Image (tube, rainbow, N blue to C red; front, side, top):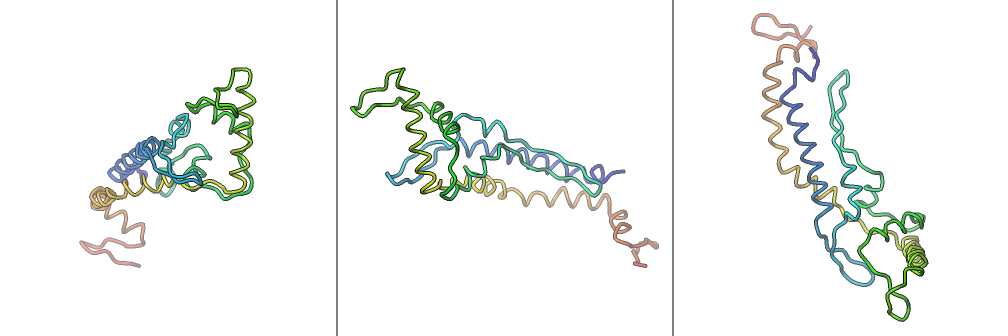
Length: 190
């Protein structure tokens, strides 16, 4: 019998916990957050296209000695959460795609909305300006992962019940794995 089968209560709890954490991460990406910039404070969602939220999933892994649940998502989620120092900025192509996904209308220097033929040029200019600022100042952290984990950890104490249940069901085998032998009602190490 595998360890996962023996610890089915713990496994079920961890599956539920990791799925809830994915849900909380998605909620945190959608939540309005007040952030500061050199031009003042602004509020908005972190999630722009929804691609990062859709990429989040709980991955189950069974090993010889047990099991684990990991949360996976797009790599740039780490930079969104932890920010990044100035230096090497994202590509202008990535920034242009990001800008196109924003619900904004670009204006020219006179304050008039950009014409369709000028729009691509304006987007490219804006991408270069953003790239320059990121190179100079970096990106401030949003801490959406820490916020989701903080909420999830408020319920982690409930894991004691399934673990106690599994340990009680498998006590003899746990002691045998630790090197004990059962003699009567006692466990003796040899």
